[in-house]
Image 1: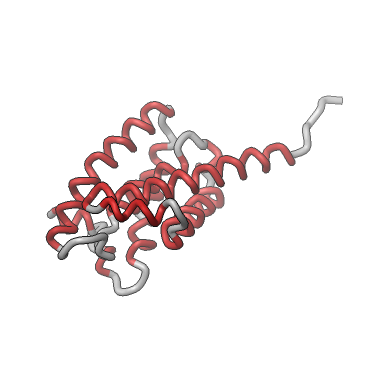
Image 2 (image 1 turned 120 degrees about the vertical axis):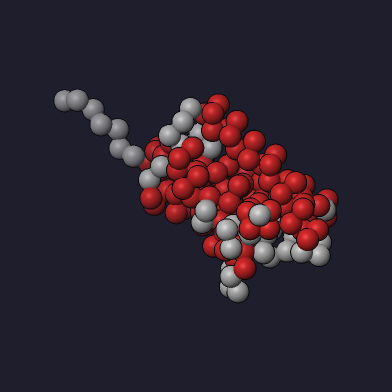
Length: 157
């Protein structure tokens, strides 16, 4: 059961881009969370990540150690961080942008993301995805802010 959950209900065993397919499970989770107040969003995300650390750790041990490609729970549990508190992300195109940014940071692993996997165990497996999500959140939040500033002001006249 642990491997099944850690592998995203089997998506982690796909032969091509298992992390991307596994991350897709985070989209409905993020969408659902955006319908709740910020404190509830944050609380649920923190709880999911806390559960994700031992889940990924045990799966890693059973799969021979390290961040095995079959483990995708870290991807789908961290993805909702990208949209945390960003109500504008509850549109299909913005959710798509959030997903693309997250996958960009998670797959390319620019420093300091690349250094977090060296922590090892479930904590290292999850932390690199958390940082990828936080960096994607920053880019998305700045993008939303800039986009809103470019919108013409409507005045009554």
